Image (cartoon, rainbow, N blue to C red; front, top):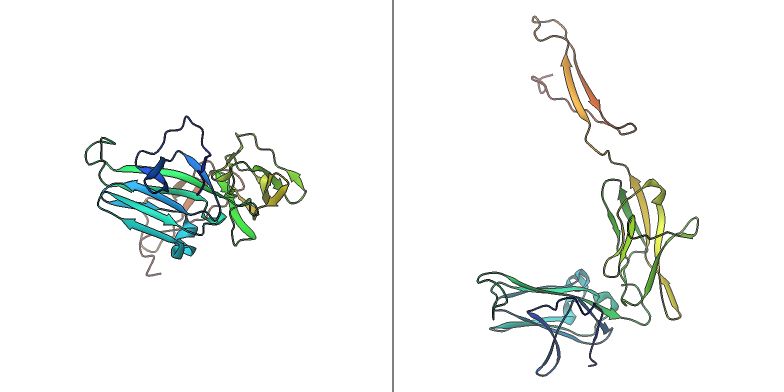
Length: 265
């Protein structure tokens, strides 16, 4: 097994309890991320008496037969064989009790790293979805999860029609090689079909197509006021109650009434 390449900047702190097993008696502390080749085995060791693991969702659902976790008295080992680009993602462990001064007594320790399984034929983490509908809410960011298997891939965002590249300025839209594109300021002009384009060397591939549906939310909730035509009436007399909601224009408001005797008539 070849020594993996670190994908993170050297300044990033390494995990204190999570290590990569390179061979018998050979260990390497992992940083924020690292890269392995698809097909290579993976073996991680996490120190602690009671250790819990978290792996990418794909492994939990589709790759259980390739994943094995061994538990020992003072550590736990995670082993993965026949790795694929779909195994790319975050791997983490946490121990209930810290050891060797790694934290305060009784404090939980955690180790996390993001592992890229580079595939020369698959630049994007494989998915079964060809089209994916994404609701573009006006009041909150939205993620287009076009993850790559290789951190060196150059990724851009494109509109299907009219065909054009969508500007990514890091403010309205930003890119994270571990997550994909985040639209921080959703707007109606972004609605439609978008996709990611990755290139590395002479290989170019497109991701799942994302069908963005824009949904406008008011900046604040409508403010209701209620007024009755009279404060008291005689039995049998008519009266009216008016409810008014003040809010932004073009925002539909639904009224629901509750009043005494509602279940009777």
